Amino acid sequence: MQKFLTHFAALAVAAFVSGEADAQNMTLTSPDIKDGGTIANEQVFKGFGCTGGNISPALSWGGAPNATKSFAITVYDPDAPTGSGWWHWVVFNIPPQTTSLPKNAGDITKELMPQGAIQSRTDFGANGYGGPCPPPGDKPHHYQITVFAVDVDKLPDAKNDSASAALVGFDLHFHTLATATLTGLYGR
Image 1: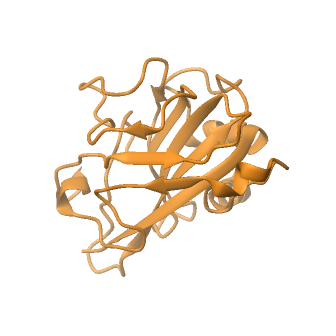
Image 2: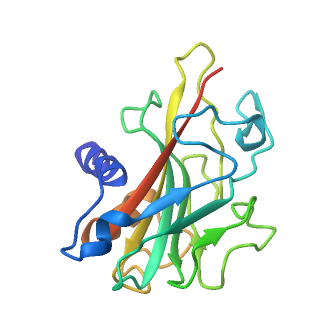
């Protein structure tokens, strides 16, 4: 299992190239988190000793391969002291015409996700976005936000919001056409 999770984390960072010329052109940006920048308190978790706003960042992406039938988004902390990292957000079956998510789309009570998108279980044990909250005194952790261009409209094994990050990762391993990642830093 740990070997699989390590492999999936590597997939979240590395772009898959499907042979399509535009697969390497995929981009991901956020007005709330700059690549390599410090994550603001607004996106930090509220709980576990953290006092952030727990608001998911607005995200925009482009350059997906023409064969894209859906998107998935993950937020992963490879620095978490668990031996397998920490999954902060897992979203899949995002319709292919979607190229952005508004700020706070990760709050499942706000219903800001496009119809059909599923937010499944995070390592906090809840659905939706859970912001950064590393242990006090740790060096800043790297929070990898990745958008996946997927070659199926619905993941075949991850069927609902009870799907684990590992199950979603299993499906993404076999169905990802391209990815784009931005990484924010946070420590306390």
